[in-house]
Image 1: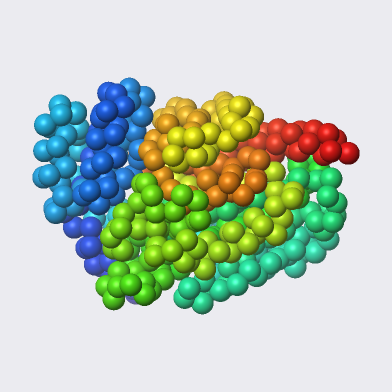
Image 2: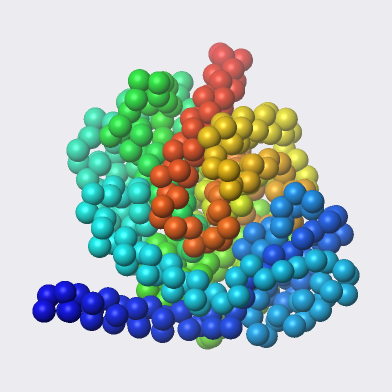
Length: 430
């Protein structure tokens, strides 16, 4: 009888999951084989004009772009590709089916996850909150929990400050990382949680310097409202969940286009319903204001800001208009070493990390966290795009351990190299 009830419960959950994903019925994901920059530009133009959901920006002759098309824009988009002779193929014929498969994997995993640690799965908001509270309570000598404020829907947004000197030693640089600014990019948050684990719960001898010589700010969930919404309603939701005062019909803002740097100029949509809508004004979103405030509170010591996203194996830096910061050579050097450390242990099916200016490698953008961090004075400000292994935003939990461990190696390299630059600057000003 008990086994029958379990089967019935699982079946009911499956029905609920299927209904939840009906919004993506008849959507498909297509690969685009780009040959040169003109085709890259064509793709960017179509994304903007047709409100196409880009899953992976491609690089000519290196990696294919991935786009999700709807019945409303599929014919026009593919006709434009055919007109220019751009090769394309179906990567995912039915997005709803793929989402249902992911849901079933997660249901199966949840029944077997008693021994899993929080960074080995996709935790919900409450689990993340509980973990941060627990770490701060267990390690009060080195960990401080900060509740920066409420999200739009009223969820507490918390981060950890990790320091052996309670942030009082100004000779130490600060490493600031955050994740899940885009709600659907679930795989980013485990990386931040694993970083906490490696610095606090499982500090290894080879990493002692990372704790003693560097202070850390780790914000695992920038956009908790959107993140929870992707678990309960729309798996591929990207934006925040704020109510737009300029319209009654559209919800949310692309948080990574909402920062006050070249705001609303390129790589955005003026349609409040679009995925890349930047908001009605810079910092319209309380969540992006919190990131801004953290940056300014510690601007004299934040040496590196790592804004973690998914997916595509990219390590990108400012600016989104193809201009470069004065220290671009140093920024590129740190990024290249970071990517190389990850590539040394990557899985065969993952691409090598590509490093460079975000606009030159991918596309023009405005209002990004990466650009804002660089603009206000963080010496090394990056967008880190984690691997997708061909699953897009639906990376199976089986890959989380690999992503965590390889990314930590890159984080360690970036921390040490940026620390060297910080010390050189401090000594020069002494």
